Image 1 (cartoon, one colour):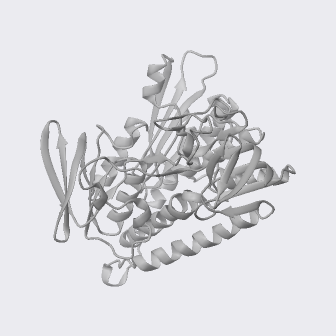
Image 2 (image 1 turned 30 degrees about the vertical axis):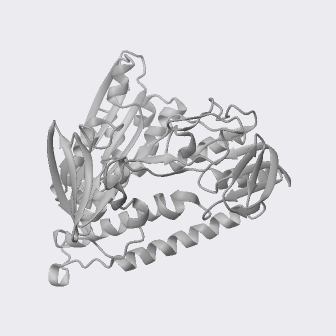
Image 3 (image 1 turned 90 degrees about the vertical axis):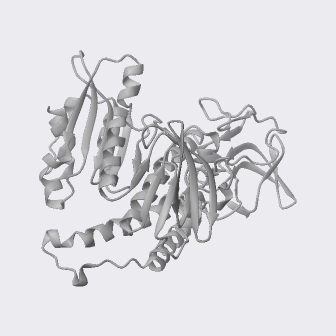
Length: 441
């Protein structure tokens, strides 16, 4: 059967592209091997954030006495099965919304396999199109070490209805940090083993260090600059062996989470069809087109930026929708939250840009004090030596950082001078005052 466009994958890149395609009058086929919404909706962004919200609520209840609210017995009981139930309800609701958005496209459930440059097969049936959009996403990666199969991934944790008394997390990236924050809030003893010198590789080092300090204050143990070498089990306990600074060590716990990133999902038959791949995923040009004209790869499968909103933006660009792909803000939903946009200080230095780094403690903000959420930092990098300074990057650790970052991201995207944010009136008392307060320094 012939179509105008075939879209492989119904995640945050695929389903918006399908909705856009049908609105453009294209005969559209959307192929999904699992469930509508992809990883982000079913076992990634949305489910994790429901857990994050439950974790945040647990902390609020524990600290209720500080706000004059007495909690009977003073103990918080974590009903993990109800947290999972709530998560499932939210996912189901959003999945229905995705189904509505792509209702005018033809939908096939199954695994797509390339049989030629412009043809794919699903369950023995062949489909062709002049344009094919590959949006197959990514899946959890595992270290190639003995016992790696003994570890759970984030996917399994999101359906677990029993809380372990202790957990070892291999990997201090975004996924690892979110689960470290979640499980620490739930009362689980958490140990994180990170290969790099600091958690959150790729984020601003000052912000990463500040988050680590906050998590240490909540009882999380960190083993940095350490390579996990093996996982073994004896009885009900798992032991992770590691090497740090040339010395071996080990730590034991009731469960081990492997959180070392995600690897691209590559459709079968793609290289035979003429599409080149590399270590990170499917090779594409600046327009996300592969080596085969008319065949595109967007989202996690191309390995450029593994963020759901980046996947959507890439898909929209391919569909001809005006989209600015720089900067791409990122957020980590720990307590406190972390958010980043633009360049880090390390990147600014590497590029030789004259700059000024401005730091403002969150505790200087009135709303933060009323919230009892004063642990944090706003760091803004602006150009120096120019008539009007521009924001090069903004990095926040603190309450609602994921919401606050958008103002700085918009300023960078629109090319606004830093003075534009100072001129705009920000309501008082709000956390939004943090950014102009920093820029006024």
